[in-house]
Amino acid sequence: MSSPSIPLGMQPRIPAAKVAASIPAPSIPSVSTASASVPAAAKPVVTFTRTKPGGNRVNPTTEYSALLRTVRDAGLLRRARTYYYVMFASLVVALAGVGAGFVLLGDSWFQLILAGALGIILTQFAFLAHEASHRQVFESGKANDLAGRMLANLFVGISYSWWMNKHSRHHANPNILGKDPDIDRDVVSFTEDQAGETRGIYAWFTKRQGKFFFPILVLEGLNLHVHGFRTVFGRGKVDKRTIEIVMLVARIGAYVAVIFLMLPLGMAFAFIGVQLAVFGVYMGSSFAPNHIGMPILPRDSKVDFLRRQVLTSRNVSGGWFINWFMGGLNFQVEHHLFPNMARPHLRAAQVIAREYCDTHTILYTETTLPEAYATVVRYMNRVGLAAGRDGFQCPAASAYGR
Image (cartoon, rainbow, N blue to C red; front, side, top):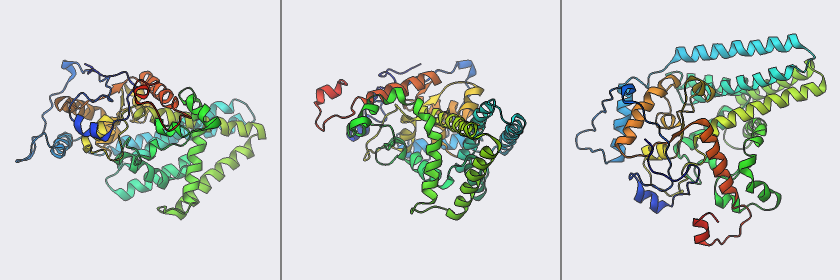
């Protein structure tokens, strides 16, 4: 049963004072929920671990600790290596199939179909690299790093070190201004303050950024490659810089060389363009529903770990296809609560986490994928309306979105 809320995608940024005052009460004005009820007959019996003697469930630390112990006692933090071996092997077979088709087709525009398929396969490899970076595959941190670095650099062609640095900061501070790099302005603006700083043609674009959001994802694949090269050749600290440079240069160089040697010039450019476009749209449309349109917290907000992760994340409902399509990111709440949990265990963890949130009056958000995309577009459009504004805004007009 859904809790009373404002419409999805219309949540304002929460001032620090209101955050402290409104949590854990269920009436936070900027949080929406579409959590679907699980039929009583389908609910497993969940026994929550009691808090330690002397502790109580009002204490935020003991609240999360109790949830974590419950999940651990249910065996949901164990690794699922067989699952990942099968996934990796399946993707290698698919990649080999595309390679064989590429050779057999030769000079044919049907190659663009294979280019699209390659974009999908590389995104699936990126999901595996993401899971390795979270220590979900192996017990050993070194083994996960080795697997993640090889998958990211050699297969996908993006920098593992760049991803680790950016993504680790995001997980520690999701949707927190000045701390979460995922809501720093790049091409689009995520807050009205960011949009208000735009001028000229950029302001024109920002006012319409919701409409352009998904179309411009065709450039996201290229953007990810560029970020990787800028990182490894930049002046900042890079873990295993030399290895990453060798991997990235070898991967991108070999890929481009093969395409241009095997195909006519125009077809080669078209092949790479289609592959990058599919890769970018697929990556962007998998990560966008996770947090865009959820509450954005001030830099100095004081929110405990449990609520910080749940209130800023959105799950996407669906069966096995959604789970495959989004690489497990559809269980975003559980992924943030238990970042080293293997993908096959997330669905079972969801039952426990949602019941726990209901018990502790913590709003839990879940929507369908179309609803999530619609929320993203509405939110981006609303933020974009602030493009080109002067510094002063009438408080009353701002409150009513005018």
